[in-house]
Image 1 (cartoon, rainbow, N blue to C red):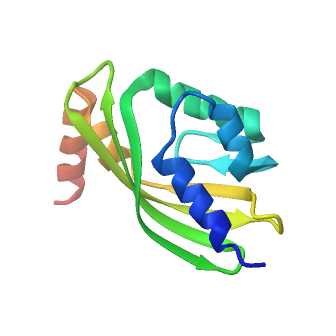
Image 2: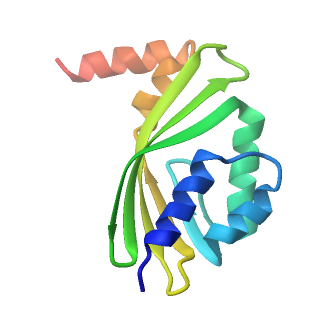
Length: 144
């Protein structure tokens, strides 16, 4: 099977993600029992995945993914991306997290496995008040 249309559909989902119709949009790209893992979550199923995105919309304003690179080999894909947003509680400054995702598609072009890779310490914790200062100090101390 050619998974290129499935990859394009997934990229479009991420680059246009919105809170309206979120569960329906997820169901168009993820298999019912899809596994999802990132630095904070490990869940299975569309409802659990939708809950992660609901939480994202509660925590940040203006969330926007930009897929900068995608590689497809058979039923597997690797995406490099930037997640741009504004934290609601900590700072009104625009933020950007850079990361990558490994995807596995089933025979119908639905995502069955989604694994995000990004450095939570560097990309998120260092940007928070108080905790950020501590994380930067720890990083400098470890580099000596």
